[in-house]
Amino acid sequence: MERNEEALSPLDGISVSINKRHAFVHERVLEYIVRETNQAGGVIFNKKEMASWLGCCPRSLDRAVHRLREQGLVESQPQFMPNGAQGGNRYRATEVGKKHAEAWRRLAGTV
Image (cartoon, rainbow, N blue to C red; front, top):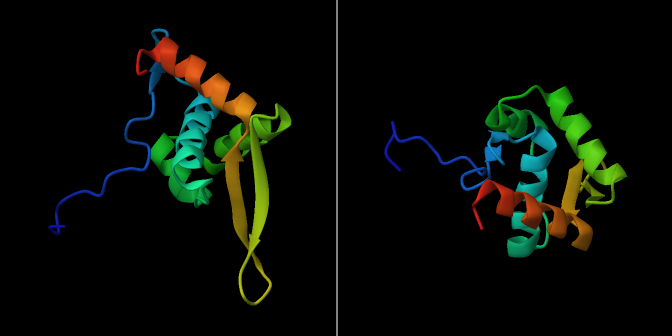
């Protein structure tokens, strides 16, 4: 990669609008987690970086992830470093979450 070439966001290909309105943070996060679940079985992400890519604050991202977990659309599993410290969570979409994301993608016209 050349020095001045920008790295692609992991959100490339994720819907930014749904049914002619701006996609909410929780919708975009779910779509991303579904994609990563389908490709790699789940995803671990840095919340500060992810919030930056989404154009929101980390607290908004926390609320979105909490909402998705409460609705049963994603599951999280804590990950631990070799020294025993918690290193973050691994997120994976549930089957219900996959169906929700598919419906949103249809509305966005990206399916």
